[in-house]
Structure formats: C-alpha cells, structure tokens
Image (tube, rainbow over all chains, first blue to last red; front, side, top):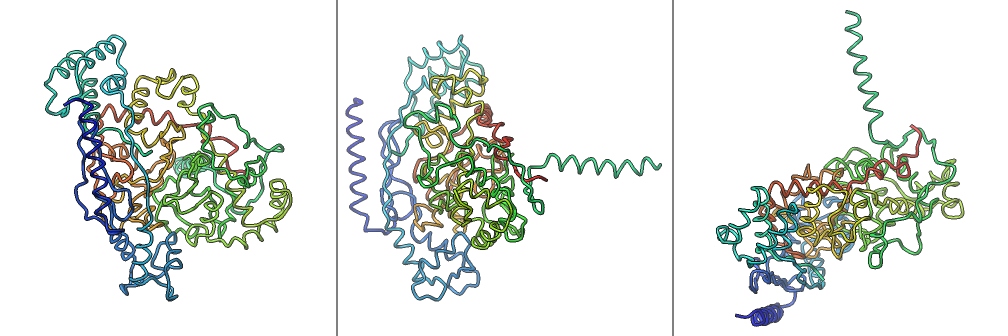
Length: 205
Length: 373
C-alpha cells in the first residue's frame, strides 16, 4: 500500500467516523463511556477521534450525570437539596444562578436544568499533527558526542521507525545502535523511539 | 555548670533570631511604616528579551483601562503586603503568595485569616500578565486580573474583608490617599482602584532573567542547544520540547503556560473529587480540567498541582511518565499518555526545568515587602 493510498484511506475513515458520530448523536445526550474510537493510519498517523460537541462526545468523556453526581456529593445533610453553605465558597454563586423557586437552594430539578444548559454549550476545536523529525529527532535529543552523533544519524537513516519497539529491539536498527551507544544512551534511544512509535504528537489548532 | 545552663537558652535564642532573619518577608501587622524609594521603582516599560517581544509573541492581557505605571504598581505592592486587607489584620496577599516561592504558597492548601484551610493552594503569580486568555484561578472562574485580585480579599475564608469598609479604612490612613493620588490622579479610594493597583503590581511580576533566558538570548531559536547549558540541561530541553512543549510551549510561547485548561488525570475517578473548571462551568467536558501555572521558577513552587499533591518535581514528572491515569475526561483536549521516561531522562528534564529559575525575581526589592519590620 503506497503512502498516498494509506493517507487517502485514513482521511476517508476519519471523515466517515466523524460524520457517523455526529449523525448518531441525539443532541446533548452523552455517549456511554468506553474505549475511544481509534482511526489507524500507520504508526505515526493514528490518533483519537472525538466528537466536537460538549455533552455528546464520542469516546470516554464525562456525562452530564457525572456533573450532577459531583454537585449532589455536596449534599451534606441528605435532604436532596444543595444550599450555599454546603458548597465551597468558590461554587456558591451556582445557587443564585439556578435557584428558580427562590428557596435559597438547588433541588434535583434545578441542578439538572443547570447542567443540561451548560452541557449544550458547544466546544469547538480541532487537532492537527505536529511536525515530527522522526528517528533523527530521537538521536538529536540524546545530545551525543560528536564522535557518535553522525554515525547514529547514519544508522537511523537506513531504518524505518518500528511499529512495535518491544518486539523490534533485536532488529538491525537497535543492534547497530546498541553497538554504538553506551548503556544509558541506548536505553534513552529505545525509550525515545518507543514514544515516537506509540504516540504521535498532536496539538489543538 | 552555669555556662552549661546558659548555653542551651543562648543557642535557642540564636536559632530563633536566625530563623526570623531568614524567613520570608512578612507584612506588617501593627507597624505601617513604609520603606519606599524616593523615586519609584521601575515597573512599566521594563526592557524585556526579544523572545518576549518579537511579532506574534505579545500575549499581554493588560486592559486598555488599566495600563501599568510605576506609581500604580508601587501602590499595588503596598496593598499586596498590607495585612489590613484582611478582616483581622493578620493576612495579606503575600501571606500565601510568597516571593521566595515565585509568589506561590509552599503549603499544599492555603490558609485564610482565621486559619481555616482553603480547598486549593494559591497559584504562582509569575508572568500572569502573559496568560492570554486572561482567566484566573485554577478553575478560571475570574474573567480578568482586576476581578481576580479582589475575590480573595472578600472571601469569607481567605481574608474576610468588605471592600467598602476596606476603602474607608485606607482613606483614613496617612499614606494611602497620597499613594492613590500618585497612581490615579486623585485621593479617591475605591474597591475598583484597589483592584486595579493590585492587578498592576501582579502584572509587573515578570520573570525573564533565568539561565534559560540568558541562553535563549544567544541562540537563534529555542530548539538550538544553549551555550550556557550543560549537556544534560540541553538534553532535558530537547526532551521537554518534544514531549511537553506541545502544551507548555504551544506555538513557541516562552512563558511556559498551557494556553487553555487541561485535564491531565488529576481528578481520577472519584465523583466527589475537585471538578476544576467543571465546577465553575458545569460542562461535562470541563470536569477535571485545571488551569496550569507558568513553569517559570517551577523549581521553587512546590508542592505542585491545585491540591499540592506532588511534593517534588520528581513526583510531578512520575505522574506523567509512569502512572496509568484514570479519568473519563483524560486527554479531552490533548492525548496525554504515560511517557515512560527513563531515569536519566527524568533527571535531564528536571535539570532543564531548574534553568527556568529566575533568582533575580525571587529577591528583587521591587517585589518585596515595603513595610519596615
């Protein structure tokens, strides 16, 4: 499979995933907690896709019920109402915000209304991959002596990033690096390579 | 024998006097005598390094109606250290925001004027001027710095003051009307002006003279090895930029803020645990997110986290390196997984983080207690 084909397939899968998630999300109702959707696109392209809507997020995210549960945890006297005094000072303004019947407390209906209103607020963001300098970057991070730096770069230039470092430590790449580096340097090279293969850097746009 | 009896108390006396001399500056309780320079210290128009001022790097949150002035920040400094800002004259802003600790609280949970414990620790106040979102507290409930500085004063736990009453108290003081006149053009004292002056002082606390800044000034880019760094520090810098810089140096920001609150698994799965930003917004997505302070001077701002749960930098890095982190909102903004640093990588990271310490700021008289003890 060529890189171009793989990229196109990955992009298509991402679009289908996002569109399907958006189509299935019935307003602000939460998706059950579970394993996040993962779109595989090769070892350095995979990242988590999550729905961009607060309260209806695909993937593992707190639901409105979690916020309600959090608020109800302040009900010290068990009367199913949250008064100002039961809340930390920093949260006491919530009572004025949600107390529709003016009884100086939040009952379960008022709590649910507050949380439902907050949950419907949209949260928009997007991801983009951060440029990566691959295995040469891992070598640069080691800050090797001049005598080792260029040979190390030459070694990694002859190899691809392994998909699974744990299984690949006996491969040519690691054997050559082990012969060049001391124990500490080699350990750090393996750790850096593992991070690179396991978790591509992704940032918010 | 007599000498032996005297030696013990004498030793205790020496110890007590030494401890008192070395303790962080404490604001005056009964003594309101000020020790201010004849010409005010320079707070405004301080010459900052290019990596703060180049195009695209201006993250200043100073509002147009409260520009920083030398007299304004001087007044803010006096207010910051004045214990009369608390209801029982025991607690000032500086009681919890300690200069030697980059204006953070060295205690896991800050304590108020009656000794009651708050449920979070006071955040460091360094470079907050450059937190572009201009939202403050761990949960970002304050929408600007002028608002933020007034909330602890009025808190029933922290300082317990009534703003109008405080303005009246300050108006009857011999020094404050003069200081307000210098700062604002007339002697009127209001809660709004107290907030503006305190905000000016806090915005003036800018750290830019660390070893990082020295090295950065001589380098073409932050990615280059710095001449003044050891190999270990440069290695730590490279590791930081590759693994931590995505959040802490987003778009090359060298104030080392995370630009938005983030969830890094501090809440765990306990439904009663501090909800962070979610406690203020009630949005499920915000549950467990917290604002992050600048990493500048992180060496001296322990313990770390909103609840001070990490006593050391080692413990803090271990959290991101080794622990399987459980939280349904984890990585909502950015995937944060166990980074599995080796021991020598952790040591390099810590060596780098210590280059962000600005010793000048930690002892700068411009930011010290102006009251004579």
